[in-house]
Length: 175
Image (cartoon, rainbow, N blue to C red; front, side, top):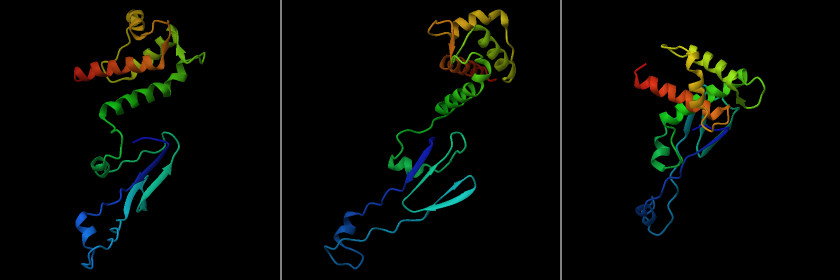
């Protein structure tokens, strides 16, 4: 789970029907006490935090990642979605493009023209694991494939799709 503000709630334990009929003293008709909550512990950046009912923390973007055993959340269906390997790869590609984009978007338009795209691709393709070559003779063909909306500029999402396709081809080739 990723987010700027994260809250974890421990679900209340259900009281069984048998507990409703007979409480701990064996007397019928009385309301049983709620079971005691177990003390929960979560480690965040090496610091143990204790809680019983819930815990909330807020962080700066990209400064913290919390890894927890999600079995209790999976069983109780308290997360609306799980982070899959594909979602995580997409996030990594988006983050990588986002972090390097400003170095190549010299006019700060939010899009790369042909010259900016060529510089971006030259650097990226030279720095990925071998075989890593940038073939300038195929640049126009590559640019046309990348420019999905055919506006003559490459947008961040188009670059992410292109980088993802390169990495998928390399994975299929076992590289």
